[in-house]
Length: 297
Image (cartoon, rainbow, N blue to C red):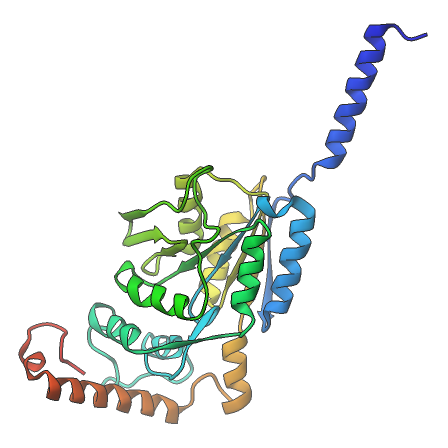
């Protein structure tokens, strides 16, 4: 017959073994899935990773432009920005490049232009992840200067990142506003990074909030950001990163027009920008005499 001490030791060993079986060790590193054109795939991935680790140990990080929201017209949207930066096959001519792109033009167009959802089901999907226990926040390249217009459009489309944001344990949404390489801010579940490395920015916010997760699901339409987040997590020994390159908007444009941007569409964006400035300068004639960016096409 086993002694009481031996019996206790045996029970402890069994308990520890069972506890070990009930705990899933995170798989280190990161994976990328390219050419994702529907959030159906991402929703399935979130469901699977939640079953693996538990929803409260899975962080979901979403880009905004051409991922959650997209422009209703080309001018002021992500396609216009890519064209201005020379990132598309059609390049702007010297007289088509917008002066003061970051200082004036982008902010003006964000304020003026309403946006639409990339997929109509997105508000419900995001809400279901939040209600199911996932931490969910937005990570955008937009500057903190554009927060008001950004939050306005998210709210207008029924998306609230303050419902289950990344925050220190036991607290509500924190407010951070700092300058690193450039200025960044985080509040209401939206991190605005002024174009800085999103892998570095994600690590920064995790460190500031003191949070760790067994898994991260990251979705973005820009290849540079996909690669930066992959680089940040590929050697991780405690977090599994599932990274999705979401290309729905560009795929739709290629299917409809034969390219992401045609020469005719580029010419129209240039014409629309000049027409907008002409109208504004007619209504506000003092704009044309202001030194700096204001009032220049």
